[in-house]
Length: 125
Image 1 (tube, one colour):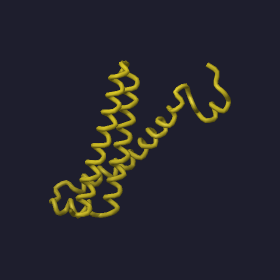
Image 2 (tube, one colour):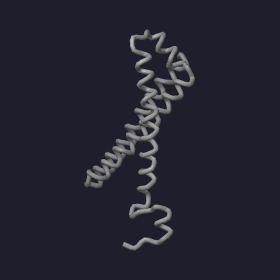
Image 3 (tube, one colour):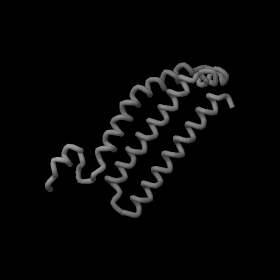
């Protein structure tokens, strides 16, 4: 297969879109490293805490924002990772389409449920 110099500069392979997923997955992986440390710190801080203590800690705007970023980054990373696995290992076209749709739906539901829970706790509703 011959590639044009412009295609090489833009980083477009045969699929024309693989590099975007590749870089987004790497970006979310790096974000997850830092945000996971914050998450573990919050979990440790909450160990042995009462409901009121947990609500107070998660009510802190900085903690709530970091936890929302963690949920967003982890959910995007999870969706892309499963999408790559499905695309690589599911060979039936209809089954692949259904699995990709289910993966996207699952990621949105998990992300929204976690974000809703964090926002509800954060705003004290």
